[in-house]
Length: 111
Length: 115
Image 1: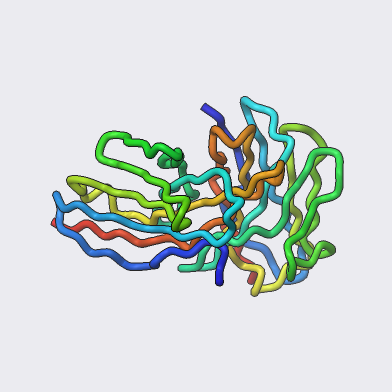
Image 2 (image 1 turned 180 degrees about the vertical axis):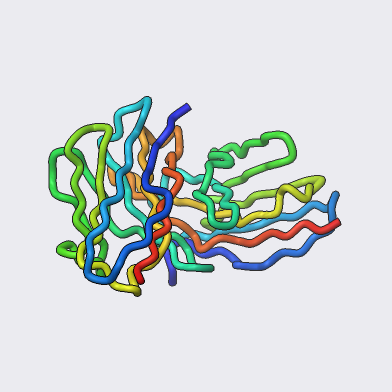
C-alpha cells in the first residue's frame, strides 16, 4: 500500500458544483497534513493546512479523520479557475519533517 | 510570506554535460530543503533531503554520484545533475520549510531537457 493515496480523477464538474476529494495515508504516526494546488507545468502552492478540528477558507473546507486515516477537501461553488491538480501532503512526526505527496487529483471545472 | 527562489527555470543541455540548479530561501532560514522530480502526469517524487552543513539523504534508487546536492548555507541548496542523459529530462523542484505550521514553500521549478 502506498503511503499516500489519491484518486487521480479527473473529476469533471460544472461551474457552481460542489466537489470533494479524499486522500488516505498509511502511517498512523503522521502528524501534519496539507492540501496543495498545482497548475499545469507550475510548482505546487499551498492551498491550506488541515487541522484536527477541520478548517475552512472561503469555498474550501479541509477535514481530517484520524480513525480512518484520511483527509478531505471540499470545494463549494466551483469556479473555472479551480481547475488544477490537488495534491495532499502528509508529514511524519518525530522531527522527521519529510513531506510525502499523493499523486494528485485532477479537477476540471467546465462552463 | 516565505519565498523560495529557484533558477534556472528552464535549461536545455547536451548529453554528457552537467547542470546546476540553485534554490534559495529569501526571507527565512531553511535548515532543510527537499529536492523533487516530477515526470509528466506523474506525482512529485522526493529525490533527496538536504540538510545545511551535512550530507544529503538520498531516496532509494536515486544515485548520489549523479545528483550532487550541496547545502552550504541556511539559505542556499544546489542540485547538480552530472553527465546528464535524455532520461534525466524532467521537472525538478525544491522545497523548504521552517516548521510544520507553515507547510512547505516550493521554488518555481526547473524544466530540464537533455538532448
